[in-house]
Every structure is written in C-alpha cells, then in structure tokens.
Length: 501
Image 1 (cartoon, helix red, strand yellow):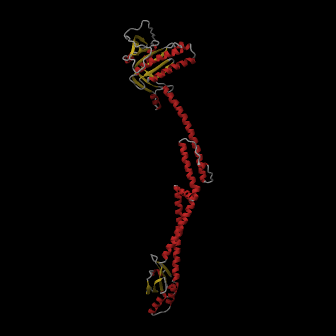
Image 2 (tube, rainbow, N blue to C red; image 1 turned 180 degrees about the horizontal axis):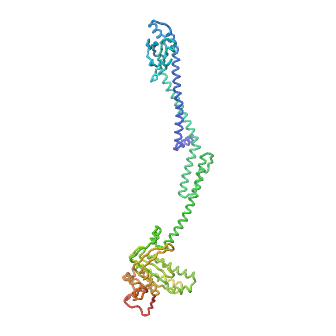
Image 3 (cartoon, helix red, strand yellow; image 1 turned 45 degrees about the horizontal axis):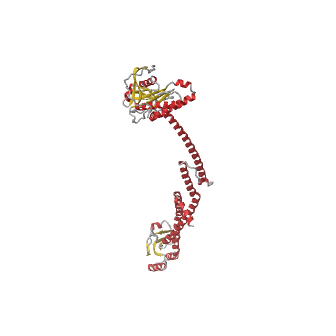
C-alpha cells in the first residue's frame, strides 16, 4: 500500500503536476462556491420562515385583537401581554395606527422604517448582526386600521447557518480532494509519467548527440499510443533519427574536409614559408619584402647531362629525389629556406623570411654537409657524382607574384652573383664571394682563389670555403677535411681551369 502511495506522490514532484492539481482543486472550489452562495441564502430563508411559523399563532391572536373594538387601553395592553407572554421567539412589538401614530410598544422595539411600509403590505428585515428578525404587517394586510411590527429572536439562526456552511465546506474540500486525486492519478498514469519519460529520452538524446554515442534505447520507442502524445513520441523519434544521421554525415564530411585541409596545408607549406602562407591565407596578394642582408646558395650537379644519358628516366628521377631530399633535410636542420630546384640546380637562402644574424654560417655549414652527402651517394651508387656550390651575401627582394603555380622567389643582384659563384665555380668546391668571405673569415678557413671574370660583373675576388677553424664550435666540422692554415693571399694554383661565361 505504501509503495502505491509513494508512487502516486511522485506525480506531484513534477511542476506540471502541481499546476494541474492546483487548477483542478481551485476550479472545484470556485464551482462549489458558486453553488454555496444561493444555498446559504436559501437556508437562511428557511430558518427565518421557521421563526415565522413558531410565532404564527401569536401573530394571529394579535390580529384578532386588533380587529376588536377595545376602548379601554389598560384592557388592551393586558390582552397583548397575555398573548405574547408564552411566545419563545417574540421579543417585542410595536402597534401603530393608520396615521403612523404609535399606540403601544412592548419589549424590544423593532427597527423597521415606517416609510417602507407605504410600499409593501409585509416587510421582513434582519438586523446587521443577524440576531434579530423584524416583520411588519400593514393595515392593508391586517384588514384594519393598525400596523403591527414584531421583533423575533433570531440568535439561533446564525449559528445554524455557520454549521451549515461548515458542513458544506468540509464536503466541498472532500469532493475537491477526491476529484483532484482521481484526476492526478489518471493524468499521472496517462500523461505525466509518459511526459517525464519522454523528457528523459530528450536528455539521453542530447547526451548521445553531443558525445557521439550509440543511439540509446528510448522509452518512446517501446510505447504505442493512438493519441496526441503518441504522435509527439513518433515525431521525436523521427527527429532524432534525422538529426543523428545528419550529424553523422556532417562529422564524416568534416573529417574528410579536415584531412583535405591538412593535405592542402602541408602542400602549401611545402611550397611557401609558413609566414608567407599565412599572409596569403589572410588575402594578401603580390607579397614582396626587402631584406638588407641574406646569404644565397646555388648548387649544381657536375656532369648531370652525361649521367642522364646513361641512366633510365625512372632511375634518374629517383637519384635526384634522394639527393634533393637529403638537401631538404639539411635546410630544415639549419633553419634555412629552400627556394626552388631547376633541373639539377638547387637554391637555398638564409636570413629570410625571418631575418637572422648567422645566416652566412648556416649556409656555410649546409654547403659543407651537402658535399658530404654527395660523397656518400657517390660511394653507394658508383656514379661519379660531384657538385659545384656558389654562395653570395647581400640585399634581396623576396616575395610571391602571380596567381598560378606561384612560388616564393628572390630577386636582386645578390641572387645573380650567387648564381655566378656556382656556374663559374670548381667541381667539388664551394666558391664564395667577397661579401660572404667578410662574414665567414673569423670562423672558417677560406682559400683565396683570386680574381675571376664574372659575367655581368667583371673581375671579382672569390674564395673557396675549406672548413671551420674551431673544431669545438656548435656546427659539425666536415670529416675528412683537415684544418689547414691556408695563405689566403696566395695566387690560384697554376693548373686551375676557370670556366668563364
């Protein structure tokens, strides 16, 4: 029994349940109140009529007395007293002649206004406190020349009315509570409980959608109803199925899009420096920046045309890919920016797009390690590989132009000079210009090659980079290259062959 009571009381925990219960209870009270008001007055009239019935015999005797011709006032008064002495409800009376002259009054005086008697034959009036009840019979009603007003004791009427109201109120409360309870029990089973379960389904659906979980076992799926609430449950399940499917498709599309964006991002960063790529994504076009001093390196594989004639295209591309991939790793290692490759020519720069102070040293270290990589490939592939490297330092303009197949490129005399340092260098050697020599002379061993005639520049003094002076510096020293004390003022060797363009 207690379990059923607790189950029933659970319905009232719902705000909707409490509102329904309140409105049902209040509605019944209002209806009963509307019914009670006329019942109250009807009961009051019944009780007052009972008073009239009790005093009816006394009033009739007085009516008979008033119709008799009694000229002795003393006798008249004695007769009135005798008639009223045994009445339990008559407290007093007043007798008036037709001209409104009071001829006799006994006991408590009634409080009926004589002017009102001119409009009606009988007037009934209750005092404000409800304890007295006055009735007036005019001469028109009595058939004589007198008006009789009698005061009744109505003190028992009000308590009876209160008892009547109390009985009705208790009955109303019992009926209201019973109807409300039955209504709530019915609504709780048929409406409130399913709504609460549907609410739990909505919460579970939200959690499942937000956390990408499997579809829950909804209560609404296990219930078949032929009413509006059943239609709501069907609509909920249809909505969840659609949203669940749409979210799954959207997440799949987002994953595909994310993967493609990552591919595009990696591809873009393989083409452009990250800083430049960010500026392009922000909508900038025709990006161009000036740099006061950078170091540019060109490297070219010596005899590549002859090697390509003896090698299949697939093997040639594979070889170039291995070599240039190793060079790319070196550019990453030293924080340099690979600019481009043209055929068998490799171009890299230091000091951009983010300016640095040790760009020449980084380029020098990379150049020496590039020679080591070439020697390793030569030993592994049995192909007579060697490279010619040229380095120059100076101001350049760097940027991106065009709308198709754009790359990050460099322009300026420093670039042209670096290209000449490579094209007019020596196989297996690293030739640097005078500007680069000034940046490296304190830390590196450089051999003065002498003056060469550079195309478009005339005679220029160039140097060959041999190695680092201090073996304990942070950059790795090239194994196999001795730390020689070279006379940088010595002329070039007599058998040196110079390539002039």
